[in-house]
Length: 461
Image (cartoon, rainbow, N blue to C red; front, top):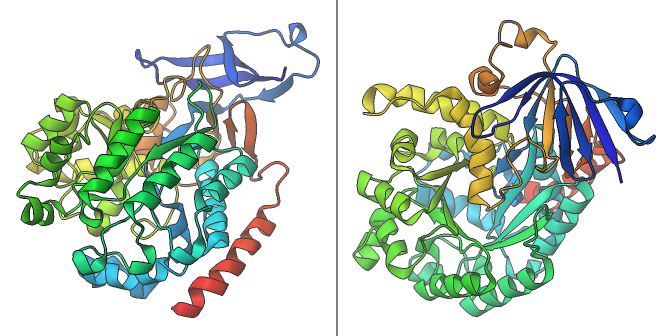
């Protein structure tokens, strides 16, 4: 048994149903769970090997939950000639997809290390990655390597086995090198589920079936995904409502949400990324079917024709979480900063909406309890006795927090914190502390990753 005692915490923000914030308390972690939150826990009564962490001046929050990402895109950050603002979407895809197609297995591993490491630095403890890029030369072990990276860093990892099956010659945007058959895709989904998926509480590994998006796959791919996922009792995910609805209507006579409902790709076991172009009827459909939405706010600045209607979704009862999205449309992996971005975007368009901006603390809820709900993880997203010991800690004894400490629940939303947190714990293990990954050499990890960026990406720019 391992025990960690956080003493004299200035605030423990629970994100529970009542919005409880404990002030000046101790918190005991036993193995992978929070066991006690109390005014005083006597260290003398705990096992002799208990680690004691002095937390006066610190706020502790539930670990953030990232519900949509593309780790591999970390290798194509900050390239001016790939800037969305210079091209139409189709022109941009024609530029970037051929570059994606050149990545190999080592690239996928090291980009996963990079993305997960950055997420952990900013308080994220559970991450879902939508890995839809399977170049033929790279093989089928790409998600296996992601699980390797997650184990090294200590990340709680949900792998989305994505894929594209519709060739470019039939109307998709996907190069042939990145296309798979439906059988290839489904067979590998089944292999990954059988090998890695652990449905037990507190598990560190789960798998979702995640065909990339309706515009780039055959309908059979989606139908077989539904059948497999429901047979194996795993979740379903895809991109919807990010500018493709009229294309789908031209092909099928239905906009994307109608198409998804028609084939059964909706329900409590489904969540969809983006959804910024949905109308009121489509929002009601998602609420009625209990289909969730991963809102990725920062890509909206670049690629959204309009701001995602989050207040309307919330009012309708849509289940909402937050996602970072890939570096092709968000050059960082900082989910904490996305909390602030989501709030500011809604404030920007509030005058044109018929709904008020959600309360600032609601955006923290999206990144914690909301994400836990989308991923079916009731033990996550909240700090309380019996919940997972997934948390991060902020030292508030810094200039940037002066005058802001009266409301810990709104702090992250309002201030837009982009700096590293002071400590991140996942499953009872400290994975980031005082600027270091314990037991790992960050400089060495960065150097190895950068070698593969230069080897594969830079030479093609």
